[in-house]
Image 1 (cartoon, rainbow over the protein chains, first blue to last red):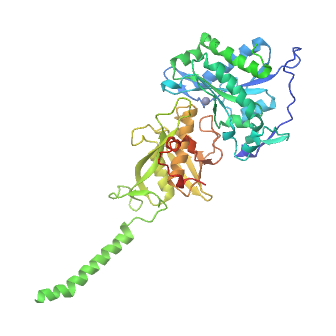
Image 2: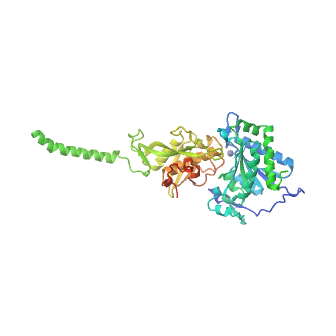
Image 3: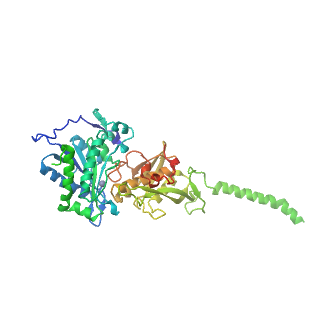
Length: 238
Length: 217
Ligand SMILES: [Zn+2]
């Protein structure tokens, strides 16, 4: 309940100079490795792999890949195996004024058709009832104080765009044909920036496991995430 | 002749008195108390072996399980199955019982959305149509993980409570007496949770038999 009463200071977001080549200010993206500490998330006991570890490895691999390109800077919400509440992750991202947030998770489902990558965003149907009407009009609140639960409201359309790009690009390396889904994920509610949650494969699927755990596997999908983010932020993939 | 008179004189009133007495005994001690589960279909069965005066027979209730045939691009849905559950006159005790049953497989053999070790510790019905359900920590420790598993576990509880108790429209979930941010890292449980009909398989099928009348307005 307490977070319902906590308010989030949202200074008006100045548009970052995304196309600047001077290096003066690079856009910041936030990568959130899901779970951590006693919250292991999904687990494949046979393979000895937990979602919290797979998510952190994936976030770190992506950070490395992004930093090599020097087109943006990266903030990881967690860098170790620690328990971190969702509101603390969002607070970290919001304070840093990230340009977007990608929360990295994995699935675990033994059904055959459940492999691959899935991208989720917070669609209008899952916004708090009192604010869902405001969103569709696309009005970005100029108010400096926004309740936590409504932080994502002004960014629903952008989050949808980012989700569509990521899903389309990740389907190729993960050999899946999934569509973007809206889901009432708590972390996304709190993010004052375009935000999506990606399930990078299914821990129950042997091919997805390889994609997550080997260097070669990771090299298949990191370019897909990079090109989606570059296209979203800069309008081009390079 | 004298025997016939005696029978008429004492036998008939005696039989009537016996009938009256047995009726009174039945009314006072055997007949189940009227319960708030008035909309539920009662299965008439011999009295159960539970503690005297607490449990009387069984009642057919709606329990929710992960639907086996979800489409690939949809979240895992829930399926309603009716199950005879020990009947209790006290609604909160009845809610405890149906939630205990919820951790076991369905009558058709679908595994529960909840770990078998996850049991309700307390159930309180508060004013404003709110049920507070307190679970043991096994509900978090033994949940297999993943978004679908978390959501189906959550809504198996919410739907099982709100569908069977028309006086309840929302559920507050606690773990060992404490509020939690989420059950397993994805979906918020700090507020009151209401039924979500879009997560019920039969509800999406117009031919499905869904008891909408028990849902919150
Ligand atoms: Zn997760």
